[in-house]
Length: 137
Image (tube, rainbow, N blue to C red; front, side):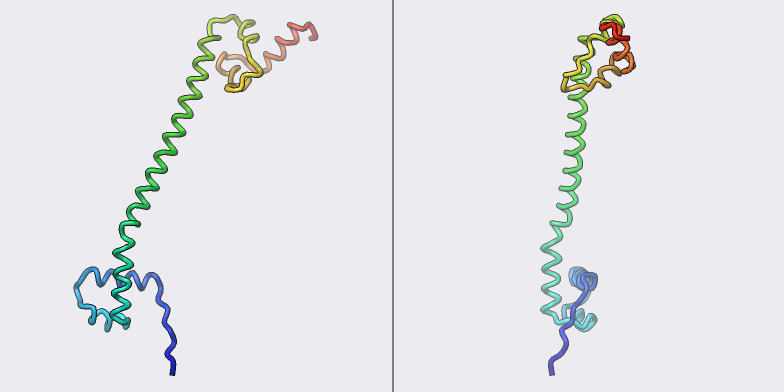
């Protein structure tokens, strides 16, 4: 008569493998205690010892990836602030009318809204000044 094949949970396997690593009991004693063949216990112990370095390296790799993502984000912010600072230096000592005229709608690195913020202008003042310049108001 065939005996039914037993499937053990991962938690049970880990428990047995940890018990073998502790080395409090012999393989035969653990085999009796957990009702598992000694060969199977040896296989689970080997799986545990082989996978331990991966457990610790995965966490380290994850931390390194998170740090790299943060560094990339900070470099992007620094680059954006440098672009804004350079543009602002070019346009800071202007009169109100000159500031309105210095807004560059086609400037790819800074939006019109951001240019207005840097110069301390309301975006709506651009429409008003363009109406005054063209005489269409």
